[in-house]
Image 1: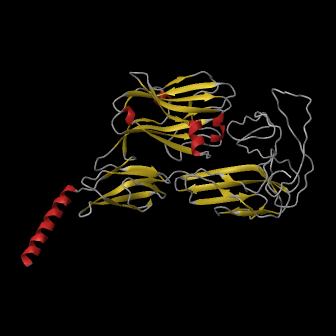
Image 2: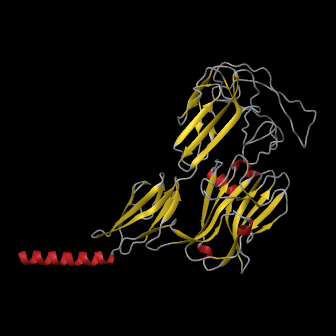
Image 3: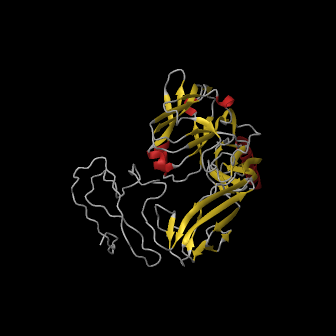
Length: 455
């Protein structure tokens, strides 16, 4: 009996040893790359290899240090000088900026950063595509407007786009940004790079705070289970073969992968594999949601009612400083401070967001009216910047435009935070085509019924 057990033990050791030799843990990342084409749009000399096809000289692609409100790329690239910029124009724009010819290597991606306001994309935006030099065939990577609609994207900040180039491996191509439309908004492009995934042992991943890293299992053998350990990552562990991990704090972090075939295990650790850099925040004030919108001030609120302001800053600030002229308190370092205005007036406010990479301030002059009387409406500054024809696109229907042939329309206003009186109602009409100029229009002011419909 002892001889049989001994033979079984030897056999088990022999089998396990063979499986262990066949099993080897290994991994890589989509963000572990070597750039082989870089365009930072910092100088005319650097940009001279690109071509720009122009139809509107007042609004075409050009190099500039940023647009209004101190929007620059410095928070991501401290050495930045300019960005590829296109300006607003009321006239038709069809402007294309095209890269030089680039040979696409295996395992490549293209990435760039874009600053834009998604609200105005219904009027004008760009497509990003590649053209095969030999055949003239094009591959579109992004329709900016359709992407924003599908994603429900509503930020106005630097957004990084990245696209896999597997379909273009071995080809010589050019990349193009084609901006079309009119009455759009200014846009910035920066940090354009074509990169090849780096699988070498000394590869590193470089990302900014808040960005994610896509890991890929490259283990050898009959792997049946995975255990990842991500120092500084969210989540900190994973059992997926190809997890996505977010890094919120600056630092240098290791990654460990342990794989198993059900009998044996193999592990690998890459020390200092993920390098997370801090970027300068972009300060943004979120006004109280309870306030009324107005064509003359940013928000209209009652006196003696606590109001919550919101920090909408991006870039992970580590400190905040609010200033509320006429408010109580007048200053705050809280994330979403509550402020009360005790005296009637029109007041300014500001928010300064800071971290070790820099400081940014969002200031709103004479933006808050507390008490008194004011016109109010339901049109946000992003939807319409002036009293004029409201071009609706995909953003809803408003009184003042009857492009759908509506026979009736109701505007809903939230219940005021304090007792209020309607003194008057003004209606502005703009019509390019009036079907019945003498038709009467009835205006009613009513409280909604229990279901919320007009009463």
